[in-house]
Image 1 (tube, rainbow, N blue to C red):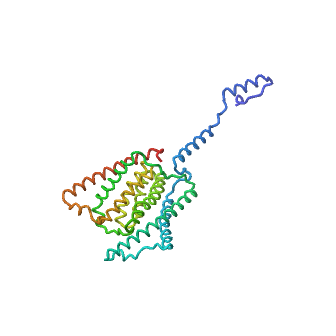
Image 2: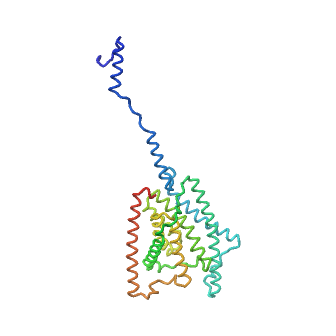
Image 3: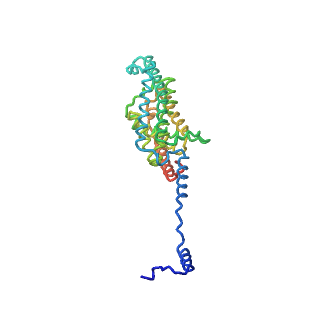
Length: 330
């Protein structure tokens, strides 16, 4: 045991040799590069927030969906209250089913005017509430208003045709479910509310906030399904809800894939414009099987639409799975 104890010598050189040997055999421990690690973490966080998404410490939570939906619904209720306070009132609902065509036409025009004015105030209130909530939650703005690229016309055409194929595919189900098509009214006010105002409000809320937030928090596949289901439920009746759910799947894919809110607003507007046209010519309640008279022509078109719909959804699903492994995409 005594050999492990270093006895100091009266010789000063011996002491210096011991210190030098100790320094050579036991080099000083290098401090960890915590500063470099910290700088790397900060740089990574800055890279995430530079993409326009909320930072991990202030990320999107499940309850944010409920808050956003409350803003969406309450803004319409408040908008309707303001419209009625200004003297813009909805018609007596019995007038919409009156036997006199002129009475029905005037009632539908009054209904459309009321809905349009309601949407105007709802947009102002909802966007203000969402912006305030985003600031309080300290999110980065994660709504992409990027202008559509040069390929937008082709993508719009493909999306529009796909929506038609989906509508024909699910028509055997939706045609059996009664739906009230007079909620928005008719005439020029209908075009304003259905083609301009409704797509703007709904796409900002459901794609700009809900889909983007869910994509950041849970990934694109989960965001795709949940946001589309919520979008469908928000449309109320069963038949419109089914149509809106499938429409939401297409719009959600387009937004996550191309990161352009303007693109999905235009696609939404094209779809609603077609619905308004069919309503004007009294074909909105007529199944395409009745228009084509059934038979081989109808079933041939139906089979084609079914194949296109199935292949498109498989392709969209696979495309979103690719986005899931690409963090830079969201």
